[in-house]
Length: 314
Image (cartoon, rainbow, N blue to C red):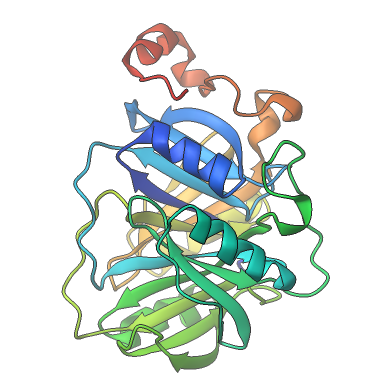
């Protein structure tokens, strides 16, 4: 019973309109689902992904009127995005042309990498993808197909103490500790954990940083990271496993586009386990994903009230 990789990552924006412009225009991702936070229907929940809305490619945002994040430990501190190895120069130029905070192209953990921040300060790392990966480009993206983002890459979390987090990752979540490297920000070391077949689409990087203050979530912060399982029977098994190990969790939650299970690791970071299906085309055609507001069936009767509270994105 193994996790197969990163499923999605959800972050916080305080400006949904600017967020949509940046992620579709600058990063060239496809808006594949425009819906609301199922626990707070006054807020958009926006999903960006590759051309086919593939599991492992979606980066999502809650639209909350939040103050900027205070950075520190006990946080999901950097989001990896996979691109072709020969696309780094393209992205360095594209980000620089738009005045974004970006470092130079470096080799980190054996892969070409490029760090940058979005307009709200969320930290990203473009990472060289594994050779031979089949990408699913979006035909309407402003980014040329060969340079488009393939999907999520290694996700970094920051904790003050490795030992309790290591126990959960290896003994509960069945991850494998692979290697470690010095943190490029000069704070502590980074320990690499693999899932499934491993590689940049299936790694969690844990930075041990006891010298940092405790983070406070806000705009530009990551809310949670989700890990992939193939189907509902498998998530039943994970729910049973967490229960047997007496790890507090949400229990299974039906998110309509996938089924989920939430819990916190000892460092305080929120983890989700999510099924690959049924996917985002369950309620609208693949060709027109994200073009109109989608609501799960239990919210459909409230559509008029929900739409009246949402601000236009265009």
